[in-house]
Structure formats: C-alpha cells, structure tokens
Amino acid sequence: MKPLRMALTKGRLEKDTVALLERIGYDCEAVHNKGRKLILPVGDRLEVVLAKAADVITYVEHGVCDLGVVGKDTIMENGTSFYEVLDLGFGRCKFALAAPKGSDFFGGYASRTIATKYPNVARNYFESKAMDIRFIKIEGSVELAPLLGLSDAIVDIVETGTTLKENGLEVVETICDISARLIVNTASLKLRKAEIEELVAQMEQAKEQA
Image (cartoon, rainbow, N blue to C red; front, top):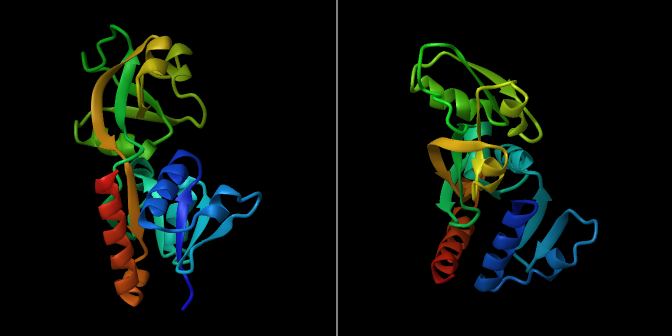
C-alpha cells in the first residue's frame, strides 16, 4: 500500500512536526537533507510534502495529501472542508486587535478601518460586535498601516508583542489563541481509518511526552 502523505507548513511548524515524528520513531533523514526536493520519504509508511500554509489546506481538501500540519490561523482564514483532529500544542501565538497606544478604539460611533492579512478572521470578529468596519487587506508588515494613517487598527498574529511596541501599538483585545493543528482529508479518514487513527494516537502520545 502506498504511504500516507502528510503536507507540512515550511519553516518552524515543519521542524516541530519532524521532531515529533522522530520521537515516534520515524526516520526523518530525508527531510533534514532535502536539498530542493519537496516530496520526501519518512520511513516506509509515511511521506512528507513541504508547502506554504494555505497550500497545505488546499492539498488536504483536494485529497492529494491525506494529512496536514498547519496553524489554526490558516484554518480560520482559509476553510474547513476537512477534519481537524489534533491540537499539536506547538506554534503558539494569538490573534489580536492592536491599535496605536492610547487611542480609544471602541469609543464613539465613527466607522473604523482595519488593516489585516486575515480579512475573514477580522470580519467574523467584528460581526460579533456589530461594529461598522472597513477592511483593507495587507500582504506585508501590517503594523505600517496605522503609522501611515491607512487604518485605525490592525488584526494580526502576535507572539511576543515586541514588534507592536516598537511601532507604538498595543493589544486592545485578544481574539483567540492559535497553535498548530493536524488536519485530515475527509475521504482518507474513511478509506485509511486504521492507519490514520494509529498515527494520530502516536502523535498525541509523543506530544504529551515532550
């Protein structure tokens, strides 16, 4: 039988997932010495595909990968037609609303403008508050938008808050906590149930031993 295929978000989540797989006993030598290869064998029963975060979701949704490891932020922004089966506990950060220090973001009735890389997350958050908000999608450093007068505040991922402080911004409200999640294709979970459930159980156990 062909190996299970797992899409990993390149970078830190890739490193943390590989460390987890090694604790279970998988041989991840090919990932450590990948060169330019993007599909890599991990033992006999698993292969890893390295991709950008949003593409991990696309590959799992379309069934070309059985499983994926991706941040909850990407899941919230990009879709949910798969099973989210395990919180892996690493890659911890949070979504936050941040504004220039000392500004009264929630005061008054004027319409507000929000700059963000995550318009769906921001829209859902503000819909729950019934506020009149205009959204501007930014691809690069979102912190620039309030400094340039483009927006009143930002919705972004915050780890330490250092970048915010350095740019005169502060967290107004935490929207939600984020960490890496293991996702599974809906058809794969039916067709390869035993294999996937065994791997999920091994990952859960290795995570608790970390």
